[in-house]
Image (cartoon, rainbow, N blue to C red; front, side, top):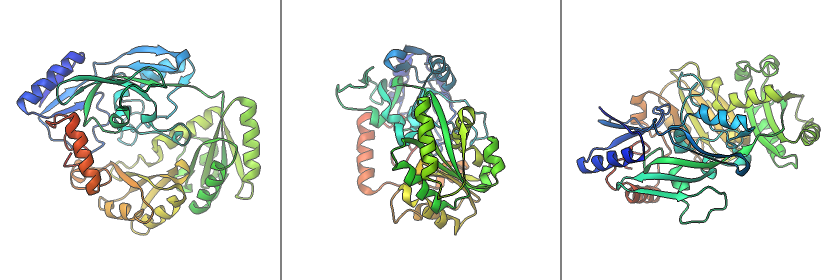
Length: 404
């Protein structure tokens, strides 16, 4: 393998020009922490962009931050913490799922893979927060899109294409995104002992209430005992969790009202401040499913009301551990064996959804569709988009789908 270590945007441009001329595709990475997410690539050359790092723009009063794609997750979080701000979409950290330490990865990987956490219900996905970027296309051209402000209408909104493309369309050399102030107070209401179907009903009621719930998740009893949050682990029961954030007096009032509204569902408790944040970090990263490492891990998105039914359908065929986020709309599954793909995808055929194989061996990821298979129309559109940005298939060819 030939390793090209880009030092700046010109290096990226030169490397892409060489790859086009030689017809040699490139595996494009920044930190490399997400190389195991997606179909395995057997490419002879790699473009490493980790040196394109550093925060070049941070205006806390304007809620905007700009950085090179190789900037570490930790560097961005430290800068935001110093100003009491955050990435509101709560990017998932897959380090524990892959058997590595938490906190690894780069800001480029976060946006390339578009993995949003529990607050997605309220704040949206990563793609909703990218304001602009610079990139090198597979044509060997530098281009940019967007800018530094939220209300930006210059040209096409290419950010929606780049975020979630897993580096298959272009090599982003700079990203600018919006940030938000951290909430003054974060509390979590726990309802104990519910079965999955009842939990989905409780979460639906909470999300449709006027109490501005920002996250809603369900942890079965078997996983709750693995939590590092004492109240959760000691309960010995399943936990239905509802996060409430905002100014202190408002949070206290809404939590009290929410507990009263949900009293008929079961006994309730509260998590405050540090314990609340720790609980949602665990949920965000699905750390309860990290061990053992030889199990396959799936991330399934379905209509929230169907979450419990989808889990039940899969559990009839396979031994699974699971948790539900997004009020039942996101299911994390850990499954024994490598033959569950057909069962997982058949489980939501009646209601619609998509499933991503987050963790499996390279052999399995080469044989099983890692991302939801595309219909004929979706495939044709995706191929045209790929051709528009990367006609020579320079960037990560086949990482998402074999034909793209």
